[in-house]
Length: 252
Image (tube, rainbow, N blue to C red; front, side, top):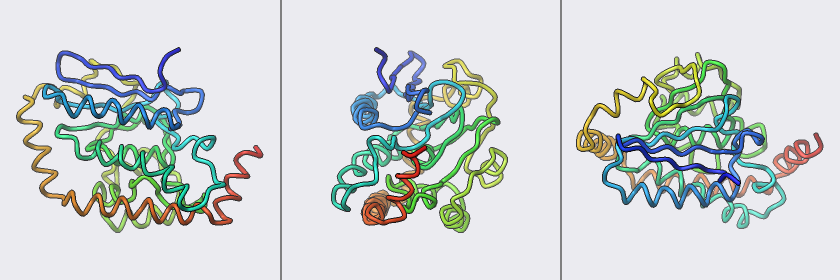
């Protein structure tokens, strides 16, 4: 049986993590979280990586967020915190890797899927997908630290509005907000022309630019904000609004 998160590495310095649950719209399960943590450790210890691409299997979905069979609603705040914290740590580690990271959003993304994309330095998104920070419609807020990351990806006023609005966005709207850098028209392939701008540069160049970016954004402040975000979401996990939203999902 294929793993739910595939890891591939190429001699040109490219590394690829592919969420491999297309029948679940590439939702994040506990197993996916565990494998992310394992593979990120390998990447952190490899001095030859130029670029990490994170994508989803198939053409329908990049990532639909947390799998509700694992990330369900009937938890106390402390239990929710323990459930959410490992993926928050994964997103922080992705955001602070010493080389560029790219979310190849091969299809639609919801909730935690948008948080995962926000952890990456850059985002390319499919013209056929639609995308949304929809956590507000579930009685919660961003729970993996993706809200704090969103404020660093687009204008803070826009980030604040997006979270309250909790709406589905077109790829055009993402591009206009500066959330994505390119519109893509195909599934990910390791020889995609869009990767040339990264892979034609040296390891030293790419890591220098990433270090510059990290210095510009206080890492100590980022981890504090992300942890506060998990704590806030955990408290909302107990709310009637969240429990009712999850019950509606399972009754479908």
